[in-house]
Amino acid sequence: MPVVKIEVCRARPLEQVTALIEAVSQAQLVAFKLPEDDKQIRYIEHKPGYFPVPPGKTEARIGFLSFDRAGNPRSPEAFVQGLRDLGYAEGRNVVIEYRDADGKTERLPALAAELVALNVDVIVAPSLLAALAAGQATGTIPILFAGVADPVTDGLVASLARPGGNT
Image (cartoon, rainbow, N blue to C red; front, top):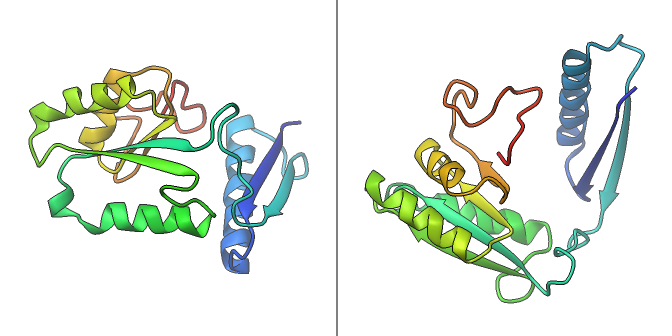
């Protein structure tokens, strides 16, 4: 029986916690074809700032690769606010390397390569085009993507149950 551990920052509303546990529970049942009573979920809450920086580092390094920041200026702001909510602050325990293609698709591969060369710990790609460029640039740095309707069809993951790779 697979065991899933969920670790989150404390102070999440009960509705969010309940929805998260239910979603993970359903995913377990489907992915592993388990009977309803054969699942285990461990839920752990931590104080803000608990989640550590990678070993041997004093701060996490995040690459933020956007296709057109001017077209969605609130995306980076919302991301930074989410980090603050988890206890991370630029200049204290996290560095964010921003790269923006200014709406020019042909710039994305070079910008993604820059982030890889900077050896960031993770690449955040808030659009399909940025996620595809990041995926082409690296097979080892984790890529966190958003704004993608069907990551399987778009070629970002092998399947939703077992994404594989680094996306």
